[in-house]
Length: 216
Length: 216
Image (cartoon, rainbow over all chains, first blue to last red; front, side, top):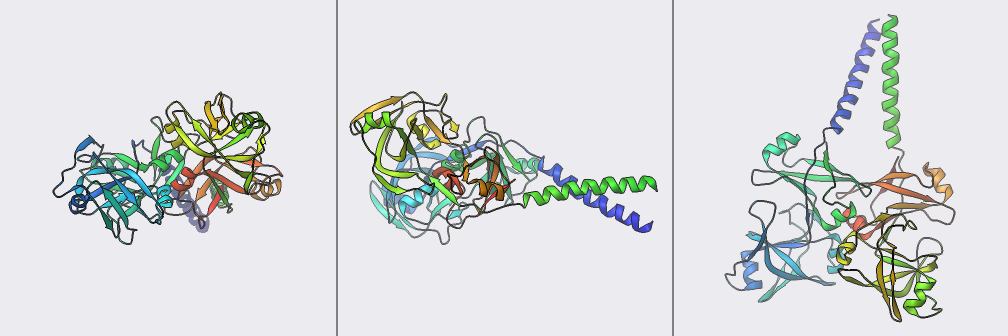
């Protein structure tokens, strides 16, 4: 009898685990999406080389992340196998230059695709940048962006996630599926947005009526 | 006591269900991948218009599916918003012309992306094709390929799937995830291969060491 009670207790505990994990997959939320094409963030030093000493970028339009904007300026990026023209410069200037390309661009340029979060540039490929006033060869800084979700701390609390956490994101539709290893980037300077590049958006056919959810 | 036994039985049954579904997700298999860029299949009539009466395509290389090959010939495809040059012709000729493009191409061409399985062309956009000897305007036939897995009937039996079934495919790696609605195309003229386009391959960073599994 004592044994049977112990078994019952163990079984109830096992069911509890299963039940709570099932409920957890239903704790889902819809998230807006931002789609990025290839672009470049420049340091002031590299900006000076490419556009002339003390050059100031000209804002073309604000982006959805507060304080971030697309500039009128573009540069050409040149790798060992090929070049890509008209790569959009994003502002404001940063303390380091970072080139964000698509995996397809890496084949064209002849550089290895390194999937990284913004700022994690150690050991990434270099490339030559060409502007109207000169060129500069950077020794590292070419990345393919790792998928991430920007949000403020209130969003993070509501969504039950933390800065630095890695989640899976589900995309609805005939071409839908899930993307793994999506990094949560939570701070109070950010607006809620799931960031993917054009290849990632197209592969899942993400469009205005796509539903995007975090699967915990 | 009788009650307790009944509860025990119910609990064991509930656990059984959970256990068997867990085992099912582990019935996985590795599948080779074929990555397609945009391409076109031509009817003999359209081939005649583009390349001249009675033209015969020149084989450039065999593809992995038996009897299929890439030709030396390319065409230009022109939509209301733009054109794409050097679209590879695949052989042999078909009874209908089918243009397989990327979602990104649809924006450039100015046509709506229609995700379809090969041959399902009803209601898809038309486009103008231009070759060295003339041009032809097709009224339908532009598709974005729905993800699918070719296999022979023996593979299907081994993998526990059927022709026409729709499965989810898991891709390993930092940029991995799952693709839903992958159609099984099983017949004895096919070789085992998961077909995706370049955007789908790049979005998941599918490469030679990626592991591809069917999740039932």
